Image (cartoon, rainbow, N blue to C red; front, side, top):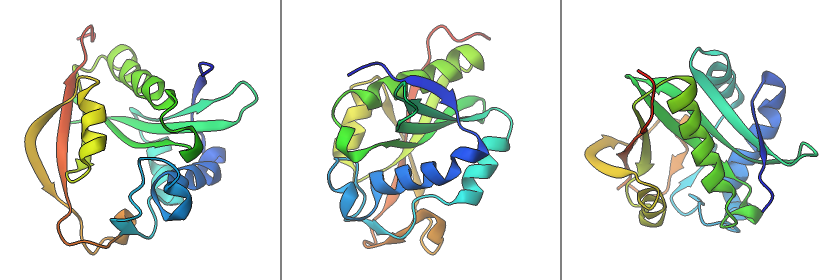
Length: 180
């Protein structure tokens, strides 16, 4: 894998981001990769207005990973929340999953939180039945905090659940070398 280049998303990237995130999590195309939520959730994974707000708010960045020709490979949202970094909306093109792109995107998001913003830790929420995904993060130094959060049933911005046992689990990793 060639190392991708990184840049912050702008409003002009919103249509491509909606397409990428949807392809990684919803519908049949998402089943090409291992991050699919298609068996748990239908409906949208993200919408343009949420993306616009994330792009515009302070200490929030949607990191894009691209090939040199500008081909979008992956993205992730990193933001400051409650004195720590928050990592979410992690999406890698399904045909590239398992090839190392995700690892370098996660490392870049951690670098932003640690070096650009001086934050001491990175947190994320993962649907708690996603054992394979949680194991991926644990291999990268994340630990289960024991904090569980309810899934927002009835809020279609998060998708339309196909199960009634969904909830989020909070994972966290210290970011060594963070500036105070």
